Amino acid sequence: MKKLFITLAFVAAAFFAQAQLFVGGSLGFNSTKDPLHYQGNVANVEKVTTISVLPTVGFMFADNMGVGADFGMVYTKEKPATGDDVKTTEFVIAPFFRYVFAEVDNFTFYGDLKADLKFGKIKGMGDDIKTSTVGFGIVPGMSYSLTDNISMVASLNILRLGYTQTKVGDDKEKAFGFGVNENTPINLGFVYTF
Image (tube, rainbow, N blue to C red; front, top):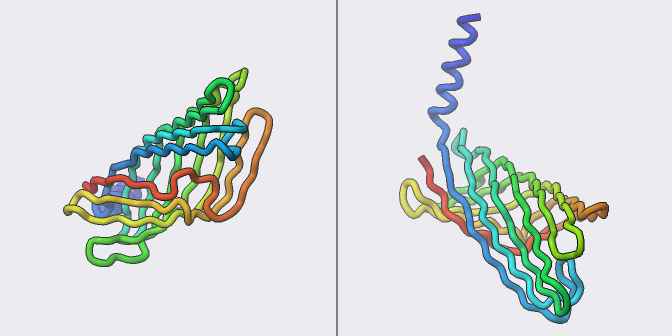
């Protein structure tokens, strides 16, 4: 038993010695004015503002493979033509598996197989309504190395392919497709690699 434990400890040490830990994240802001169309949860919405704070942590356990998770909060405020504002706050946990498929000079191109889990609350429609979203998708992205340790990253959410199920109160909405329910087509952020 002791030999097995020592062997496993050496294997784990060798595994993590090659792994590169990275931390980073993104801040997002999106504001849309459209008085003519239905948007979000309220008809006749004149303005929708979305703010997101999503830190990222993960590690690359091989040259072209890694795992990690985005976590944080997304806040949306919808201003209707008449009535009260509708405010949605969602907490996000999004674990991912990353596969790097090409490196050209300072650019790295990758794809994330991602699970999106969001839990939140909508205020302003009478009673508070709880929401939950479960989704799976493939999100392409790229990073540009600014220094040996700092990279700028961008994920192209408009190219997302996957499945999403959203539950608002007792109602469910299911979607499968290309660019599933993403408000911000490009998500920019920075990563620090140890």
